[in-house]
Length: 341
View 1 (spheres, helix red, strand yellow):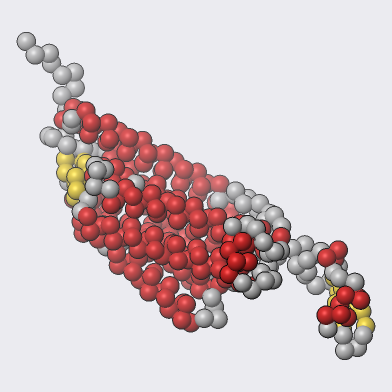
View 2 (cartoon, rainbow, N blue to C red):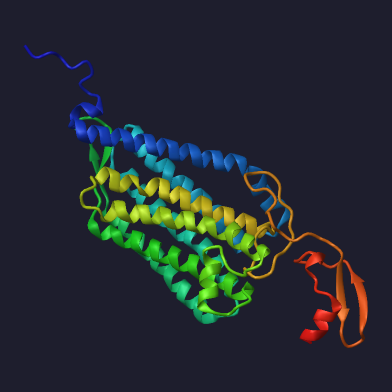
């Protein structure tokens, strides 16, 4: 006599043990991602309010908020798709695809605005990254077009059943775009600040060695490691998507934490630039105020100190209180200055 199933309409009862375990892992990771994103929204609420009340609301700020809401919408929609009973799987599947596309387009626009500010003098470079941004937006459309979902047995629980190989295009363009932005901004910072204009010197500065000043090194580390984290996230996403040995559940699951992570990093950089903790163009430091959230005072930033300005033509020394990007003890004696003039 065959024993009765205690709960025959539990969705996992209609899956083989391996698939059921994958489905549970995906739900746990999605739930954790939603929690982390909501936690970030909560701790940065004072900063987001400050953006609205103390700064002019312009297009970049609007894009910032839209990217936050679209990324939140994506992770929450994926969570509901995995845990709530749905009469039709097609509608939430379509919402997942649309929210993915808008999230990637808006988050990439934050990256584009950053590199555009750094290369404000070079229209050609701006054109290249504008093309990459358009490529990210259009390649993201492969996800709502390709993914498929279905009910688990006779239950109302939905499951992602298909992730076509051509959705790799979205992961590839994200990786290329984020890699290009990371290296382009890093090169710009190094090229502006390094003393010895050689490839070897720039390579040493890139890995944290060489003659690059301490302020610029702090600037490089303080701004670029956020982009590097996002870059590693997209590498992980690409590995999951192109790996044919990974089941569709895992291939679709990888995009959820990576989308949240990339958006969080882009928003951190945006806020730091907006509040003056990262320079707008990657070359000169600006002094700003910042409070609340996970971002405190930026280490190594300039202090408002007394500076000495030497007017060579008049041979006079004038005291000033302008912002100085280097301490007074690094000023050279007058004899050394005369030798270099």
